[in-house]
Image (cartoon, rainbow, N blue to C red; front, side, top):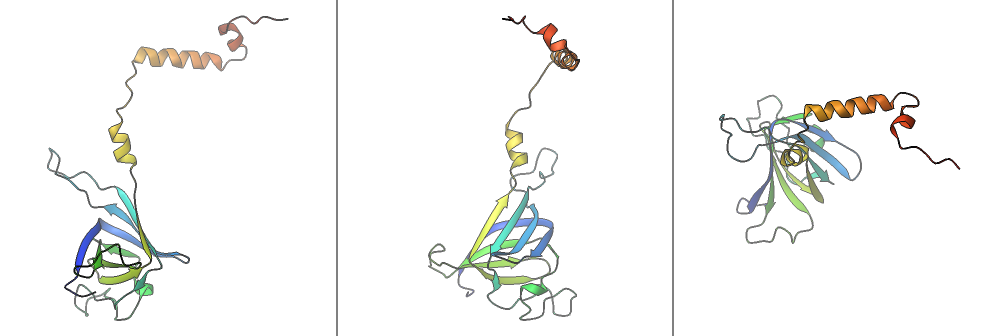
Length: 179
């Protein structure tokens, strides 16, 4: 891809990101905490990011890896090292989708992804990229918690405790018609 091309931020990770190479169709997995979006809270702190992962299908280096730091720094990838030389942990990772200037990002069957981390920059070509965000915190934050009085909790606790006793169900239930 040329420098004149366009790019779009797909996802940004905060802190350490696990980088795993796998066999099969999904050959590269990045796992970490997505960068928190939105304004800071009243305390001035941003909410913690949600867990997210990026799954690359058939990822290969499109161009040799170019370290973000100088070549003398530890952890810099050697030119033409490929995916096998990726470290197990990356930090402050951002993934950008690249396409030619004036082009349609959806027209090309292959995707060009720029992986930018504190340790390196790597231009990847892949058949597909899936981003998974774990939505549990957001989902359960939208549902208000149930408010149950202590009397109702006590009543249900006593009833369920009594039903654990053998024969208590027959005493509490309606009489059965025996025929």
